Length: 308
View 1 (cartoon, helix red, strand yellow):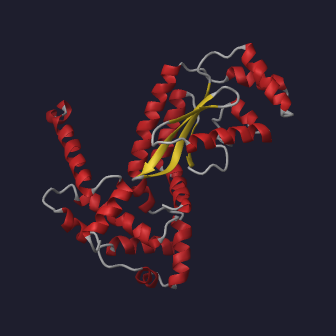
View 2 (tube, one colour):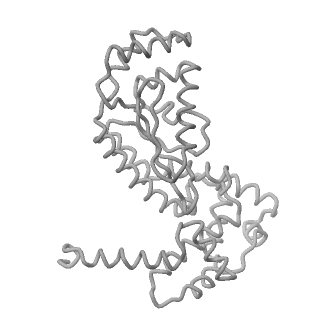
View 3 (cartoon, one colour):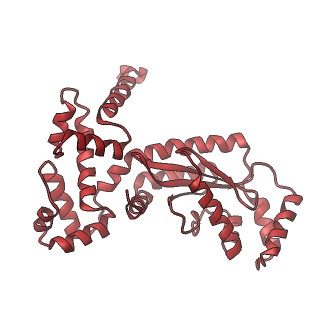
């Protein structure tokens, strides 16, 4: 997925109901701010958020401290692996970011933190104040000191537990990311809404960009630009995602062969279907079906399920 497509996905996820509900619950439960941000770092993840810690908000007012925070954010993004990223900022606060993966690609990060993992001391603030004075920090140090000592303190074990919850949510958010991308939003132009409806109704056909543009009475060139601007995706990528979502529903039926499903949803070859499905879901269609079987079996064996 290209950079613009990843940014568009993160933007849509940030506005989705599932993310908004989780962000509210996470902050109310932990006292920590939560943000979803793109992989590429262009601004501080929590900048402008009403629940941002007062200390971090103060640090964002200076170009030097802001640059130091951005650098810490970049370093987390650049850490290797697909798991949790952690760092300690110049002020000694711990931060963490969990990758959100759509299929095999990391599209963004859930980021939280800015906490003390032990009670701060006068010596800690003295060290920090020397750094800020060296930078020519123009906020009165008494305000910084008050905010520094009021910053949330968590034990390492409690912070680890918080991050485990975040990892679970990141995995779920990645799993529904494809659904979020293909959903219609009320803010979309009428032509885009009609185009998406047409694609949903004809996704099993050998559908082309020209077919859809003609269906909504626009030129192919104009429609291509308009569709990419509204969705963040090229037409072919969007069509593939619609087909994959339909395939995921059909894979629930054990009587349908994978090859039948591939052609049913509009793919012209099984090889292409397998490649696209794995890229978007992170599993082959066969692996995804096997996982569904396990989940359904576990659900049916739950005592409350049997009681019903």
